[in-house]
Image (tube, rainbow, N blue to C red):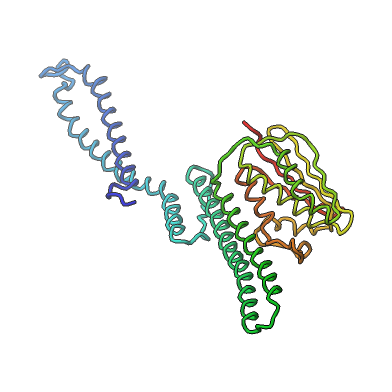
Length: 359
């Protein structure tokens, strides 16, 4: 936004200092006039012919007062300019950092030293904002690079299958079509996951009253066939847990959690427990499953897009694209909630989602 030029803040402060100092000097001279000169007799000979009269005092005092006022004005301007420059020096550093950030340099930090005051609080807040922006931009760049790589993989596989089919006319066409269908299904799933993740990150969705216990039952009913086929016992417990948000996104959140718990479970005799409850002013969804023990350092990375630990990677039809828990994290964040992941000592994962209750 272009603005017309005007006085700098330093000049305005200097003029303000000089003006206040001049007004204070004028008030002081007025006090002297009112409480001193008014009691001096105004005669041509003075008091008893000895004391000076008001006429002489005024003509003697007035030039000296004018010189004093001029000195106060100049002193106020110079002193105000110096003091304003010293006071606004931190603001200059903040402005320079803001310009560098506007030019794309987010790694710069002000790092202002000294005791806490308004400018240093502003500096610390600005540094925190730059740190978060840098982290967010780096995350978005990494996400874009990973998404491009993930989307390029099924396209490259499709191109290879088509080239092989063209160069070898005797190849079984049904086999090629079946493989193309699998690759295409994976690409569609990845694209839908990316769109859902983008939508939840933007927060562009309507809000309504949602009962998380009903959402958990719908998710469990949808995945019951998958759990039975894998020999996993799926159980939903708890009571009503209401919140406000998008029913579609919350259903996808719980479905991802349950599917993740079913797929990453024990080969035989695994269990998944989905529990909902209202706890204070929050609504809680807890998904707990059995499985192989997880390294503690692996757990925090599970919510990052396309971050799949080798201990949890799958090679079957439920391999996924590494966005399941990333979508969960994004949906929880969009609904102003919290997501906690804890590795169970006996193996498996305990995921706890806390969402604000209805107002």
